[in-house]
Image 1 (spheres, rainbow, N blue to C red):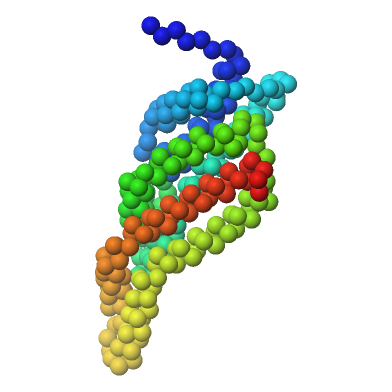
Image 2 (cartoon, one colour):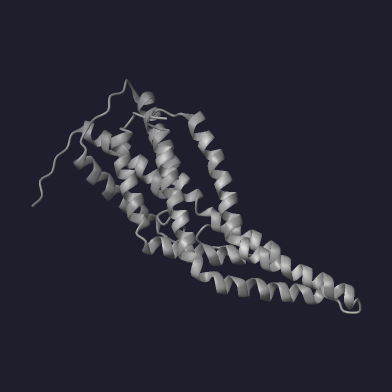
Length: 261
């Protein structure tokens, strides 16, 4: 028989920890996917909150319900920021996929991604599933769990210092990295399509009776996806770069919340 008692102060502290973890789980990679049942998210958040409460006991002082509600809002914002910064990094492959489809002529072909509940390009969907699978087998989810658990040591409950200027500055740098990494991913396809355009231009000049517009679309699609098949061996390196970007953004957002920026 298990006899476990706790005080109201401990329960209030547990609820604040649960708010941060649940907010993180709702938007973080892997955990926040639409395919993960809501009950699983709630149960996982509750179990992790219980473990953290036992490992790092503490309490929080407040003057009334209004102040306690403010603390709840701060914890929710903290969890959302940490989870969202990690999740935004996965949009790199979607951006690269849209650039590739624009080059090969499939920009208008969109399909629904049930994991993100958004309309995405065909190549973006392909890259998204492959990269997420590679990140999953690289144990990145363990790093995310450790990150949200360790955040309570650096950012105690009600100990946030929101440095919005520091966060916005690094967000600008991050979006610059998104464009750079996205262009690096689509560079082989871009080079192939540029060569194909030159060849089609020469053929249109030499044989104007041929409809190069109709022929060129099919050739560019074939050549573009042939390059994707050939360069599929680079996917692990692409996933490693995105994984490092996720870890960098987690460090940046945590640093911007505990006042060490």
